[in-house]
Length: 95
Image 1: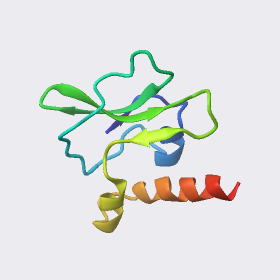
Image 2 (image 1 turned 30 degrees about the vertical axis):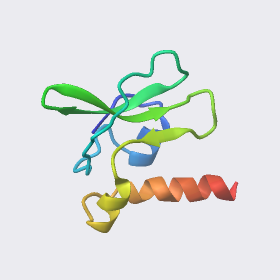
Image 3 (image 1 turned 120 degrees about the vertical axis):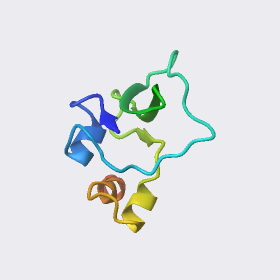
Image 4 (image 1 turned 90 degrees about the horizontal axis):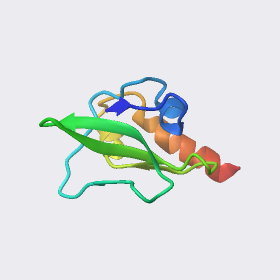
């Protein structure tokens, strides 16, 4: 997944412009964020189509929606950054 915004929660959590080996399969997906306050912060190109994988609300403290499966990445040890999503959520909950 390409992180499209360096000034984003996703970038701060992932610590990189690319999150590799994301387990992602879709029978439904976000097609558009038109008319919302959301901002696209992560995209994966699949079969030539840019699939929205992450959205955020920059006007809020912590609104991050991800469409891939970080829990699978953690369990299968596919990458080192996916556990950081859970740490970030717990950290925000503690505040």
